[in-house]
Length: 233
Image (cartoon, rainbow, N blue to C red; front, side, top):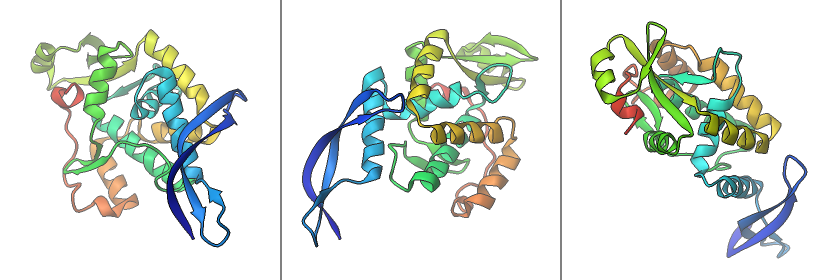
């Protein structure tokens, strides 16, 4: 049986590019039978996530938000249309990571159980922050044409336009570096999820979540609707 010692340690490792890195603030456990001090694999993953966030001056949540936008699924451009796809993609990435690496292995945003399904609680704030830092651009698409993503334009065209989010050149450079920090399986999962949900409509998406994660059936009762306020809180 393992018990927390209340102490933390740092270890030196090789990252995915075989470069030396240091993982900090790893909680130590004691094995009661032997007295050996150990640490958990899940805590190493979270420590590496903190390392990446600190290295690039972003939050831990931003890592997978930017990686998701960067992931190449052979669409014409690396963009995500409509926030409901963005938030459900992040939800699915979290679930797939848990299945692959174990629960509590990543520093993910809290998933709120809204009427429109599981939603990362801080995604709106994160998108606004990334937009203000010029890592992403928010705009409207109407009849296949790009329109400035202003509140005024949204009020004018909201019945015929969609909101789209894309990496800027600055954001693309950052996301590329972050992408290279992730292990192969993480990247495969992100691409698989993005391919699966890229063009799904709201009704099919709700049915998919109900079928695969039935614990959300009770609260997930409405199709997601796009609003400007939700994308730029």
